[in-house]
Image 1 (tube, one colour):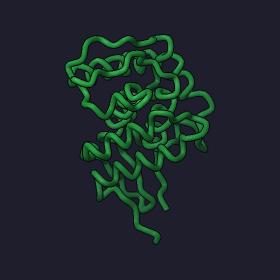
Image 2 (cartoon, helix red, strand yellow):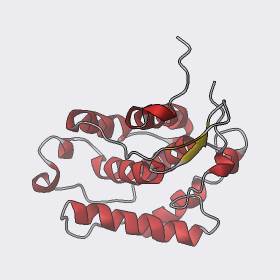
Image 3 (cartoon, rainbow, N blue to C red):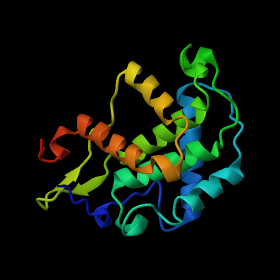
Image 4 (cartoon, rainbow, N blue to C red):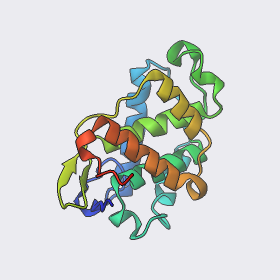
Length: 187
């Protein structure tokens, strides 16, 4: 079984010691994401960004709270709060993201949250049960088909009901891109 020591993790993009830094990091990440797709400025409810950052710290849904949580759990909790709060108001245009994605309700928040979660997991450090430190040095890479399915699967997640499954999903996606980080298989 895996024992992930999150105290080794410098999860600088989210869960920093200063919520204001996290606020600026999230907004900068949203800007970077939209620039990559050459999108016009988004309508963002910045008050909801603050609510997300407060909510994801309060009553963290894993033993030991956010300070002891794995990077996967931290990213999953953020993703669930972000998608649930829906701070990005305007859907993305077909000419920027393709024909399939705009058909998914709340796709814009799922896409942004996935982007931020994937960025936060890149270079995250975990300690395996054998005490080996492993850095998730390879960026998450998935097919277009899987990406669209993932957007759909995450478009309606909520912290109280989806946190654990999203955490496991992110962990497995990271291991696919970083096979040396994966744990010994039990079955």
